[in-house]
Length: 403
Image (cartoon, rainbow, N blue to C red; front, top):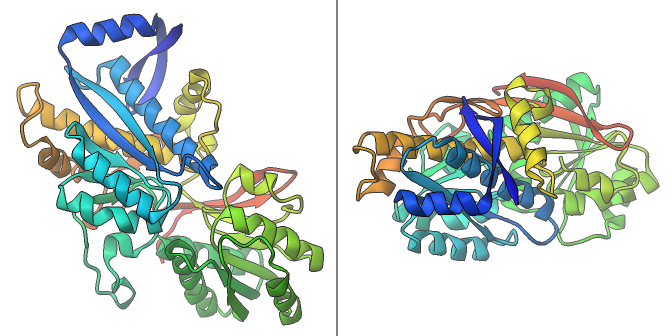
């Protein structure tokens, strides 16, 4: 079967030729290459699998690109995807599996901030680099006291290419108040670290702008019947609902809301999925924010999009495809620097060297410039507001944002 051969151009893909999988395998076996494994942790089954599969595929594409282009001479990259089922306990088990595989020099993922909380310490204790393309919980990089200004990085091995809930929640509040001209909001969250943190950040900025929270509630993310809370929303006089949570519950919440009162539901990047629209027949007018600028609007992402399509993945790259490719490429760039500094081979302390190198990477990626600050946060604070129009998400506003 024919596969694509590619050449790297500043972290992107350029199509050049074709070869066979068998030929590629034989070449790798005969060259004496060292193998580097990049672990990928994401929900590959269950309600959030649409996002998780996009993460897995985008990491796979980055590794294949590096191999075809021989980005790191003498190194062959492999991806080891593990399904965390969006469960912290499973994520922790996966972290142990990655640690035990000595060829794993970096981990990409997970999707959920709550899952990451269970993975950070074991990966940190093992000195194994972790880069999430999707975690937005601010405390993951800045500690539990970040709200008071006491920012302390809890784990030196943790990085992310997604910006924080502090930024996302504030951006959402500003957009709803200033652009959508909505001043009265009913606030709901799913009690998970991601949803609760996002809702809190939204509330702080929205009320600071002069907006009014006319009511608030918590829901179970596994529930699908929201009529009780919808009744409260209707009585409150709210002009919109802000939901801190993810699309499996957000979609039925929105639909049941529209059955009772015609106001939009707004959420964060956990809502920004094509599946939100598939699950919600009344999604028209709903709003979501997501990290970064739409890759479809970025010149830097054109080749990524084209080659993702050509590679034949049956699942879309979804919201985190570009950020995942960049997270994976950051590990590849770190390995490249480590190998170059060690006469073309991996050193015995490769994990420690790769960790040090990741903190220094700087390159033009799919989503734009990629680098990390002293907390391991991305230096790219671009945010985008989207609205459902005609059965698809349409970008409304993109800007680099700092609260």
